[in-house]
Amino acid sequence: MSTNTNTKTLEFKIERTIPASPEELFDGWLNAKIPGTTWNAAEKFILDPKVDGLFFWHLNGISHYGRFTEFERPGRIRHTWMSPKTLGVESTVTITFVKQGENTLMTLVHSDLPDCEPAKGHEKGWNYFLGIYREQFGDGSRKQYRWEEAHPSGKK
Image (cartoon, rainbow, N blue to C red; front, side, top):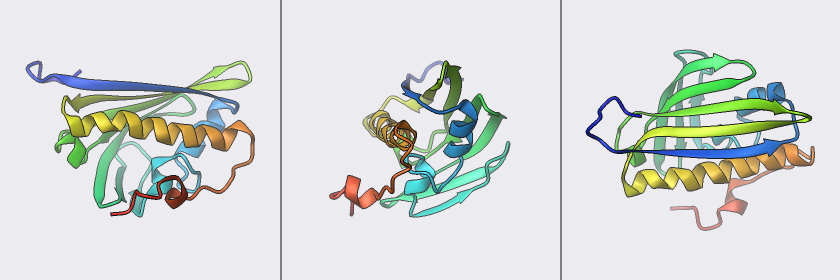
């Protein structure tokens, strides 16, 4: 939870079981060419995937930015997340990859979000992206994905 105990925060947890190894999913999550990652959908982006590396992600007129705080290959990635929808508050995204037989349980937890309507949209957004990401590994197709096809009305 937030260090400010007077402020109510939100936390969303999204899980997907994916038929791939933790190593493949960890590396894939940092690859902007793989659909389902937020980086893939960006119109403009900067990605420096290392501890204290920064990212900037711009899509549909909204900028998102943060700093990577933890890498434990192949099990965990953690970074901060800020945007107008977090009201400029720094939140935290933690992604874990846990082997389960031939599959991997991928869990994304977005915490320390302000309890407001714009921030609540992150749950839908992460569910969307993880669904696309799972499809990339689900049948091995690595099929092409186009943001415009999935969001025909997503343009400004």
